[in-house]
Amino acid sequence: MIELDERKTVILKVIIKSYLETGEPVGSRTISKLSGLNLSSATIRNEMSDLVEMGYIEQPHTSAGRIPTDKGYRFYVDSIIRENDQKMTAVTSQMMQRVDKLEMLLKTIVKTLAVDTNYAALISGPSTSTTKIKYLQLSTPAEGQVLLILVLDGNVIKNEVLNTPESMDYETAMNITVMMNNYLSGLSLREITPQIITDIMVQAGSQSSNVKLILDAVVELLEHGESNPDIFTSGAKNIFRYPELTDIDKASELISAFEEKEKLNDLVNEVTSLSVAEGADTGNIRVYIGGEGPVKNMKDCSLITANYELGDGMTGVIGVIGPKRMDYEKVMKTLQNLKSQLDFSYTDREDNG
Image 1 (cartoon, one colour):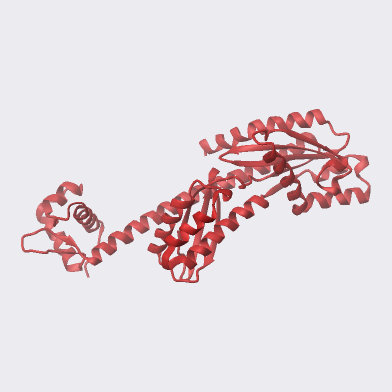
Image 2 (cartoon, rainbow, N blue to C red):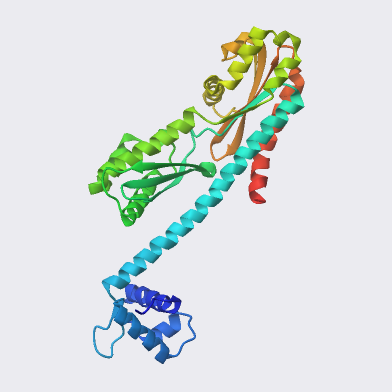
């Protein structure tokens, strides 16, 4: 059996592309000009004969050029899909590395902050509450499944494997990807209106049940990022440096509050909500003394917070927790410096990564 080697592949693609553009049968002279192959006309004709024998092209008339068959078109479409899939895999890999770098950066910052201040510190990962969708990608890893990859501003990536109610082949997944990107690219969660959802469902046609599942997953991924950003902490043991906080009950409450992500999420959400309410003035440093803070178990402490921005709509919260007699001036200056450096540090790492 004749194999479709690299040379035959090049010739076949030239024939298909030329025929798609002109609608005319393609001869050896055209292939010689367009393929970049340094081959004689006789060699090209031999290769074309093999492609005819293999069923990829046919000769509509004697002495005429060749045109692609259904098998040839199928090969061409499948090769495009494979190339797009490979490109998407490469891009996804690069973005995953970027996400890993951001997480490492945040962990380094919170550890450094705890060491520099001798207090406990926290930092939240970027919230996606106002982040816009850059694009989404669908693929079919297995029968009855679709992989949703959602890429947000700042190249934050979220993904989920969904069990589809209807069968979906790769080509259908690609078509739905294009359609949904046309509607959703550049929108935040708050900008996805009922009318947009209705329009998408109308365009979905026979794939409406699958598209509804995908839409629900997109909304859920965005809502999850909005309400529960990752939170990194460091320096909890620093609490025991201060006699007024070493009482067993007080220390236990503080450690519990510091370790329970739900309580820290309440803190981050309150600070973020205040920033949204204040509009553009998101850079305020806030000081909570004792019971003023959003976490009751921290009533014996002071909490100083600041918002940071990474651009592309991504924002997060940095915080320092210590005794009421903490060095407020030092902590506020440290947070202000970190705020101004964070965006630069992240961008610089990307430029050199």
